[in-house]
Image (spheres, rainbow, N blue to C red):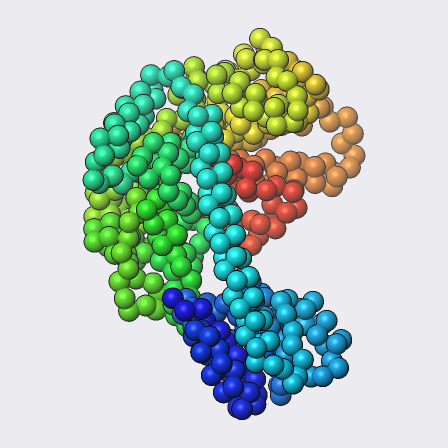
Length: 495
């Protein structure tokens, strides 16, 4: 394919001269009279190897062209043309991102050589960027596999069916099965659904290809549709350029849809079409694109209840439930707590240059007695905090763990769906009852902090879901999080 060159100059004679010469050099040449036409030349998903632009033009000048190109098309090289003696302008252009400059009157051979250097530089930038992306993807896969091995530590009988499904799926992949089925992973927030999904991906024939994850609860309907399927330029207000969606980015690999139960039913219908026909269409597009993506989805909702409530499509559920893996809560696999905590602690200590000496008997007893409403995510956070505050070569004690004697602040019903705050007394007896206002403020702040922590732990850091259950506006909920310096992403870490 010919390298694409954009020539920007307000003088028609110069545009024609440059176009004629560069086309003879074997390039595809687009001309523009100014910055606006130059931006429009980047149509669709077409890029340009080099922009040749005059600096002095009416309206937006060559500096505007260079700055815009550097921001939106960083691989494109920029060659600027300056008037005789405009050294300062040339230096400013270089600082704005130009790769080269030529003075008027210029020699056509100089232009030819400058463009040739620019095309070579553009090609090298693209190759380096693609190579870096491959290295990063490989590193993420390696880290993901390592993380999966960390997560999947289980001798519990309640995890037997999970082991069985993983074995079946890996065996099918080794047999070279033509089709790898979609997988639905269910379970409370924090049970490690994404870790299991990563294991399935790593053990499949797609394990060397892309792993792409998205939390459906983090987007509105239109934004999630754009995120999944991409959009054409002008598809909606603000869509100034073509965007490839996650189905394109995950081609040949796996797309993990976390919190699929939060997806709008209209969007569910489009997802069903992709699963059935292996085709999709960008927003604003008119052409179907092929989809070669395996879907693994996860939810902490009861999808049967969601179907009865009209919030989830029954046909999509039946399409997804060929393989359903239900992760038990950590309180139902108590024999896994100490092995998992030890593995997390070893990793956390090693990351901080310390040596983990194990848990004291009292610490093991405290770990086993706690009911872990935040599941595996909470266990990891507790252990990482202990590793942070411990001294060199420490043996962790109950003081390091800082576990409450009871699940103070929140409790869960058997289904794990209901959040109930319980009254908690002051940690020390109240000696001075004269300052009612100060004590009331102390009690109120304690309540707010515990409620927010409980809500985030239950919903796995999903601010929208936590705010919805709290019956608070999302902006007010975020304001409270900022007030107490609580970060939702901490509760998502091991989702």
